[in-house]
Length: 235
Image (cartoon, rainbow, N blue to C red; front, side, top):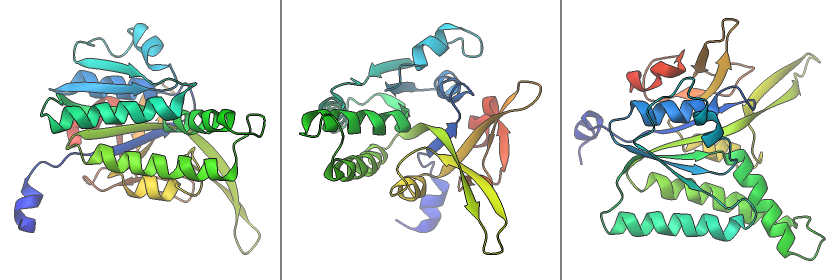
């Protein structure tokens, strides 16, 4: 296909939104589901999505949102089963979702490690190989979700680390909380990486421009940030 034809076609988006717990990642997912014309599937790992939606504070229309809760004890097998079910629906032409959302990657990572560790011989502590299994599984899972031809929305918690310049000065940087060995790979597979923030008036926004202190990017449009409620409007 010619590049000119590909550019004019509406391509699915892959977005990762991250923030500290309680700032608004579940609300972000809920707004995606409410504002989209098609159906949204939420793969719920951390069990915060439904309680957040039940507050009925920001998101009010849940009719087009389905939730599959991922087993957060026997996570390795259940996560594989969920992906296989999506693959079966896709191959049969019965995948009815416009958006698939994973809430959230940080907890999925920890649940997989905990499950693999419990199956080992080190009193529940994950072995080095378990970390490698988890890392490859998360990256390959994202590649698989992107292959379904739907919009993929991921959430993660935020981590802040200190870095030091050669001159001795230091700075802090926030980025999605996941294994440092795969964070660049996961973010590289996303079109948008944004940090959800709340201003002094309580308004939520998503920042999509990288700074020295923040991991972010926007390869979909020219916006550097927007209100969370307006995120879909710029696609």
